[in-house]
Image (cartoon, rainbow, N blue to C red; front, side, top):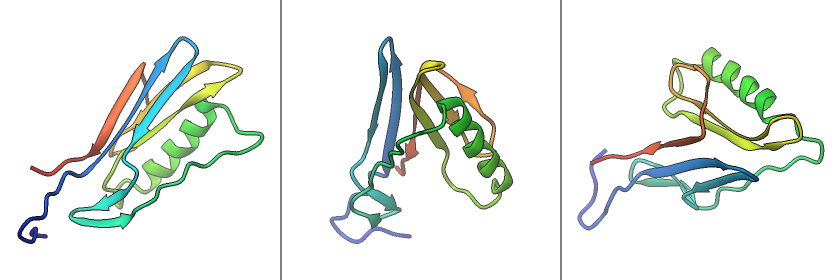
Length: 110
């Protein structure tokens, strides 16, 4: 896809950083598909009785692995729970699962 005159393609950026008392998550306020903005508003999903971050990341990892040939972006799962405290998991393309103190992802085109 080529850009029209005056268009700038900056892609999408996401990040998560764990610290002593929690996790900081950051993302663009819009979701892009190349130069096309697929969704101008990206909402957070909250549940009253959420699973642990480890469980949520394992569920996402299984979905990503099962669909690895159809995905074009990695996933970051992060949050705080009573069992493990602050946690950040990265699921890159291919569906592997990695716990780390931080994760950075997104789609950048230069």
